[in-house]
Length: 421
Image 1 (cartoon, rainbow, N blue to C red):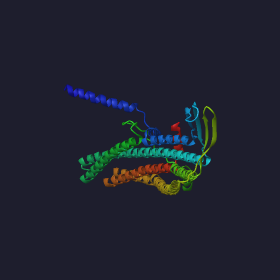
Image 2 (image 1 turned 30 degrees about the vertical axis):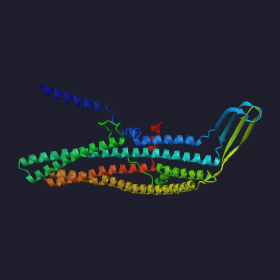
Image 3 (image 1 turned 180 degrees about the vertical axis):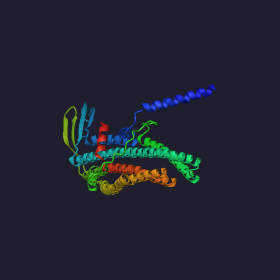
Image 4 (image 1 turned 135 degrees about the vertical axis):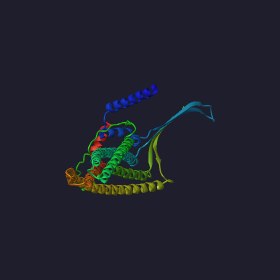
């Protein structure tokens, strides 16, 4: 008995602590979830580190070559004639000259490579924002479906209880009671399935956001904000101007072309300035001149051919990426138009008509003008239309999110920059 009391006390204390934590925990908005994901996503963090590394390579490419110093000392001893002993010394300086025809292509390639790394970073961050919003809207959809299922369960329970009373007093047939009980059981199954889908959506959202998000997190329920998108031709021009995938592909083309120019110009002579001095007891020699490296045996044929192939490959990849993005935005825009029309028809016509039919069937059933089966059919039609509307709204939000990802929404870019500051 004492053990049972202790276990009861521990269980009650745990429940109270869980409720207290849930009450004290701040609900997360979609923006809060986005910032958490951006600061904890391994892909985003790796892309940021890669951008920093490439920035270091840019600094290296801009550096001027270091001079080379050589100093020597020793003794001079004659082997013929009178014995002469003295100290000798020498020094030399070689300063390689960073010729413009190799420096400019090298620096241009490094700058384009840095732009490519920055575009990759932005692409990963935009992809993360898109995933968070998609999973957030999925959770909101499952919550809306769960709420609708709970309302259906409550309504079908009332109908079942009412039919049980009428059956007990002999006012209705057993068939109608069984039909009402079946509807209640189906509604109960739908409600339980809705709860499981909510938990599954919560788990997927936490997986996308990262484990910095608490297990028992609470989100703010928000209806999807559907903004009116510009026409397709404007979206296509925006993609060409600001898509990070295209920006990366264009930067890769610049990198390959600059490296091709560097390899071609590397066949030109390389120059270095040299100054040296030799000191012995009797005289001092000073020499000044240029060192020239002439590619006689290795004329960079293999390097130039490889650079030409890489430049052609980068241009083909740019064209393929551009065509792929155009196809994606055209497909997504058609889905956007279809989803917009579907939401409009369901919201303004289908659901309202189904709701009116349900009210008429309920009133007719209460006054004995319609049977239970007709009333249940009207309810089923209304529930199906309402669920279709819920699905259509969040499908539309998902399509808009995908289009915003493809066009690299300016609002998302501003959100990324504000988060980095």
